[in-house]
Picture 1 (cartoon, rainbow, N blue to C red):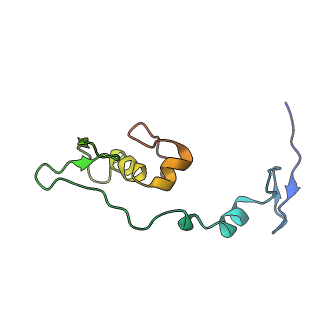
Picture 2: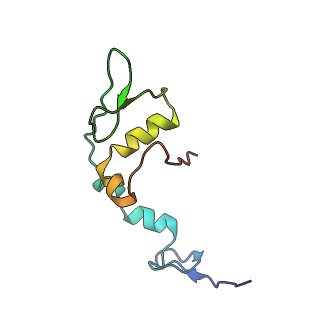
Length: 99
């Protein structure tokens, strides 16, 4: 079994496993602004008659999603262009880790 040594975070000196940035997760999060990559103007279309949601990309693909369901969350996340480009396609088959 391999053992890894720890290194101090370059900003706060917390012992961490070695990584390319040599920073802990908290320091990385405080220095990187994810909101700058995301467009705050997002629209998801819902049919007023049948209450189905239009899938990203349009083309007449509509699906029923329960309110506050994993399917609706995947549909909304798939509508964010920055997430689609960075992590490939996000769709119904996406696994959501909600804590």
